Image (tube, rainbow, N blue to C red; front, side, top):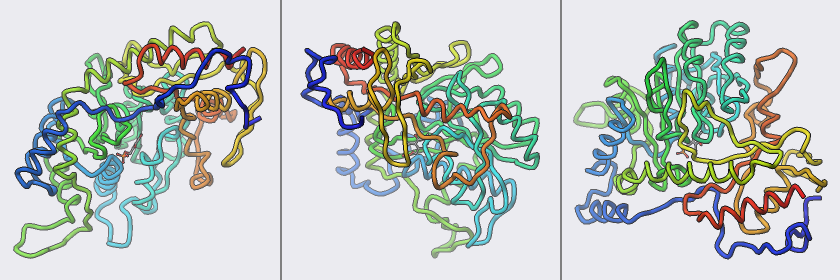
Amino acid sequence: MSKHNFLEDSRFEGLRPFDKKIWLASPTMHGDEQHWVDEAIRTNWVSTVGANINEVERQMAEYVGVKYAVALSCGTAALHLATKLAGERLYGQAKPNHGTLEGHKVFCSDMTFDASINPVAYEDGEAVFIDTEYDTWNMSPEALEKAFEIYPDVKLVVVAHLYGTPGRMEEIKAICDKHGALIVEDAAESLGAKYKLNGRWVETGTLGDYNCISFNGNKIITGSAGGMFLTDSKEDADKVRKWSTQSREAAPWYQHEEIGYNYRMSNIIAGVIRGQIPWLEEHMAQKKAIYERYQEGLKDLPVRMNPYDAERSIPNFWLSCLIIDKNAMAHHVRGEREERWQSEKGKSSPGEILAALAAFNAEGRPIWKPMHLQPIYRTHAFVTAEGSGQDVGADIFRRGLCLPSDNKMSPEEQDRVIEIIRRCFR
Ligand SMILES: Cc1ncc(COP(=O)(O)O)c(C=O)c1O
């Protein structure tokens, strides 16, 4: 059943829809943003140079703990230039109609947003997808090790931290070091999350050879758009800044010795981010409280929250998710673009829960569909930890879902969301 009238369903008796929609993760403005945007306009700094850009680069580099931050138009642009830098370092500068990764495979996180790994294709490389592990829902180090056994020549790995939860980076970095491979770190969703690397706490965004964050509208802080490349290398920072401003050389005229991009951040966008940075800690605290409230409110249901390694990581709790126990999954099938589900007593499914939430005016979302299941990438290699074909990513996609995680949701509203989910299992 995919069309179902939840408001008439006796299981949901006494519950009423939210008057104001409860979002998955929407921007939260505080007022300071307006000040810095106005300042840019008042002083006429409304292009891709200005004090807001300089200030957000300085503040983010300091916060994350890197020497240089380069402000770009979006996280995808940061990932593209990071991937290109890696390709150039490994294989040299490419001719204008060729990518730097042409003819080369790249190991990639599989359960992530496609923006993490599309840059491999932009640079003409071939993504090989590495399966996910259950402990953090990120790249499985065991599967990565297997992949190096199968493709020993690979020299680049793109790793994302899903939903703000750091992956098992200590193991992943050790494997990459052993095989002489570079890492592009996609910390788009995990700004502010911390990881204990070899006994020392560091921020995500410092864990790769090339690191990226995003200020997209749904992220923990936002500029409405925007992204950054983070590095300790002055040479890499200078290169990314130059590539992002059309690769202009130091000459009196437009002189081009490399392919360029229009990827630089605008000083207006930077004004919004400048106003948001002071609120990062508060947003994370709100998201953590939301996660813990779900954990408590759902604890006697046959579900678990998205897990993290409490010894070695502090997530930013950007999105709260749940996964339904195998034996509590009601019938639910997905085709390419449609799904069918059925109610079953004592059980439920992501399809049913998301439909119920939508009926009551709350926004959840399916787990990001793994890349190896995407039609565009289905012919690419996919490496699992066990040869038996255990596909962890597909399993989490099948049984999991993202819950409304908006930091403006009140405890009372969240209690109602929890109650809706509870009723789905009746
Ligand atoms: C994991 C991940 N990588 C990359 C991106 C791309 O960032 P942007 O939207 O800023 O281009 C996003 C989100 O948008 C993301 O969630």
